[in-house]
Amino acid sequence: MSKNKRIVIKVGSGLVVSAQERAPRFAFLHGLMADIAALRAKGYEVVLTSSGAAAIGLDMIGVRPEDAGLQDKQAAAACGQPLIINAYKQVALEFGIGIAQVLLTSEEMENRRRYLNTKNTIERLLKNGILPIVNENDTVTTKEIRVGDNDRLAAKVAQMIHAEEFVMLTDIDGLYDRPPHEEGAQFVSEVTDVADFLDATRGKGLLGSGGMLTKMQAANMAQNAGASARIARGIIERPISSVLEGKRRHTHCLAHGDPQSAWRVWLTDRLQMAGSVTVTAKAAKGLRAGTQGIGTTDLLATSGEYQKGDVLHVYDEQGVEIGRGLTNFSSNETALLVRCEGEEVGDVLGYNSNSDIIADRDFVLLGEHNLSWDQPEESLLSAPA
Image 1 (cartoon, one colour):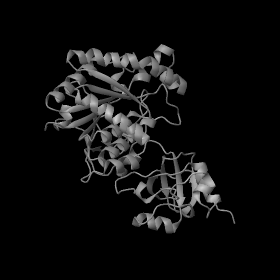
Image 2 (image 1 turned 180 degrees about the vertical axis):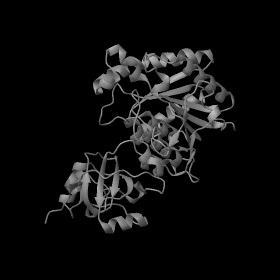
Image 3 (image 1 turned 45 degrees about the vertical axis):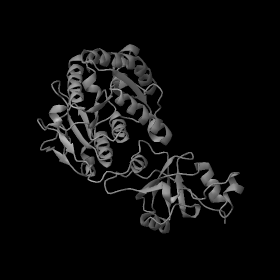
Image 4 (image 1 turned 90 degrees about the vertical axis):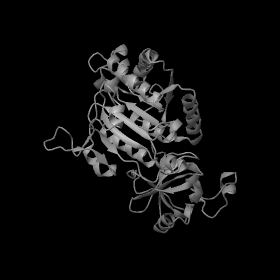
C-alpha cells in the first residue's frame, strides 16, 4: 500500500453496538482502532464515519428499535453520542490517537458554503494528525432533511477530501446478485456500474437506517469522485488492511477512470432533492448539446419548495433526468416570473438578476455513471394567455 493516501472508513451500527445489550462492542472497536493506527503509521490520512449513537441510546429512553419514531431516535441520539465518542476515545488513547467529533446534517453537505467550511475543518484536523469521527447529527435532523444513512454521508466526505479509498464495513461480506438468503445467490467481487445491481439490494438491518442499496448508492458517489469503494464484513483482526491488501473476500467497486471535478461531483451527487423542473423538448436538446441554460419559456412544470441557490433536478418531457443545476430563484419567484413572462426580472421581483432560472454555467449533465432519481409529482406552470 502506497503512502500519503486518504481513506474514509464507514462502520455500521451492527458492528459498533451489540444488538442484544445495545452497548459498545469494545472488542471490535479495539481491532478497528489498531488497524487505523497501522494505516496511519504507513502514511494514510484516515477519516472514520461511525453509526451507532441512536442505537446505543434507545435503552436510556426505554424504547425498542422496532418501536422507535423520529423523536425517539433524536432523543436516543442525544443520549448515545457521548457514549459512542467516549468509547472511541478510550480505545484511541491506547494507540496514542487524538480524536475529534464532527456532527453533520444534510445542510452541511448540500449548501456549498457549509460544505466548504466542513471540508476546511476536516482538512485542518488531518493536518494536525487528529482522527475525525463523523456522524450524522440525528438530534437535530428531521424526516424531511436528514441524510437518512451514514453510507452516503461517508461517501460525501470521501468526495469532499478527495479520498483514494472508501471502505464500508458491515455485517455481510459484500454484494450478491440477489438477496443472499435466496437459493443460487452469487457473490459479486467486482463492480463497474452499480446500476446493474440496484434491484438486488433491498432490505436493511434492525439497528441501522441503511441497507445494501444505500451502500451501492454510496459506492457510486465515491466512484464518481475517483475513489475506489469496497464493501466488506467488519471483522476484529485487521478489518481494513486485509481488504486493501486483497487478503479476504469483499466487493470492489472500481473508481471511474476520469474522476469528475469537485464542482461537478458536488452538484450531481445529492443527498436530498430540493426541487425539480421539467423542460420542453427544445430546451432538453439545447441542454444536452451544452448550448443553453434554462429560462422561464423552457419550463413545463416544477416541484418542491426550493430557495435561491438550491440544486434542482432537471427532467425532459418523458420524465428522463437530464442533469442538475443551481437555481437563481426560489420556487415562488420562479412561478411569479413564469406568470409575468416578458417582463423584466427587476420589475417583477424588485431586484435585478440573471433572467435564467438556471444559468448554463451552473448546469451539469448527468454522466454515464451518475444514478438518476425518479421524477417527483410536479405542478404545471403556465404563463398568462
